[in-house]
Image (cartoon, rainbow, N blue to C red; front, side):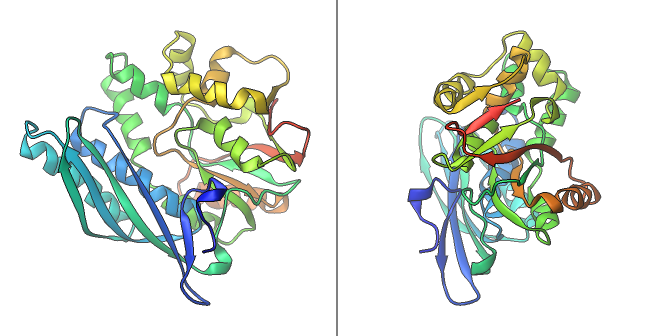
Length: 306
């Protein structure tokens, strides 16, 4: 076992032989959007993301589905179709799955990926001096909350769906040639929660430059109005003992930093001298990425927001 459950990593990794490591992950959840096809796409992209965060390539996926008996069959088909299309886009195959009756629909994937044992990325390998690069803007948790009460235009909602259903495949491939010391994908713990996990137990501190973090402008606007998901408050409670905030920052911006994401981008800790080249490669791959911070020697806190 190369990576297990004791490291808070995105997936487990098992060494098969000298040239092959198997990456195993599972993720599923209830709908965060109304459209069943989009829900299937987003849930699949979210599950596949764990393999990309570990430096691997998805190979096989198995459906996990629960649904109430009153749910129309065409809704179930749309969920599965959305998931299957994202799996095909990843270059993997659906190899079956399991479904059960439940009071609430839930969908996701158990994904098997592959990687060379020496190319595995974990979330705890950050090195002092590294540049931190984020590959998707933040704010989808706030936007999905707003969508439930009809506070988004149709264009804003479609943009949100497109962002969450975008695979991290292009970002992962663009990062392959560079010296990436650590990686994770930004999901339910929000940017600052995942940054705290990357910092570990105090050997390093991740310094986040708040004004450089890409955020959906509508998310900041909604946060200013107080449209914030409950998960953001839980994330704040978790991170605050590990966090130092320096300088003055709008409360809405801090709220977005805590915002739980679904199918968020990759957070890469890359050798500083590779940073500019990595950003160029990401841009050429069509990925909207930004340098959002650096890794410092440990300060007693896992994260500093400047």
